[in-house]
Image (cartoon, rainbow, N blue to C red; front, side):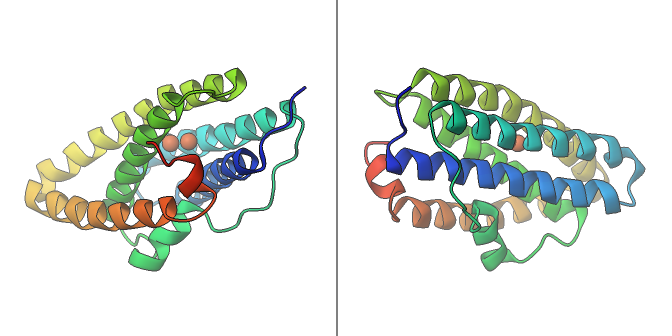
Length: 184
Ligand SMILES: [Fe+2]
Ligand SMILES: [Fe+2]
């Protein structure tokens, strides 16, 4: 069994932490939402992010390591820029932007040379599931814009896209991401 590179171990542990942060957030939202129609999809979303976190944990274990402690997930950086999402529009938009970024990033990671087959399999599974996440959120955003207008949704999406752009570039400027993803 080959051991993960130190860089790779950190990056996979970071992915694991972000999925876990997602599961915790969606679990909270599923618990507290007053919108009946969102209770089931939020619960499912919580489940799938928890599964993703477990999948990364299993990959790390299969490759001979244990996950390292990572507490500053991607969502924490959003939090510093934006605060906790306060209403349904903010939740939907924030999730949509985050899922799109994750999908794009995982696709780039998957296309890199020399990626272990276990990591590739996990990335592919996440890519398939994230597409589903984007789908249900898109549907809810369409319902929202039909009721309250497209302009409000567009404005929020633009604001969050700018924040996401900043957070992503900050992440890629830090080690070990900087070196590991220098060619993406
Ligand atoms: Fe996920
Ligand atoms: Fe997701």
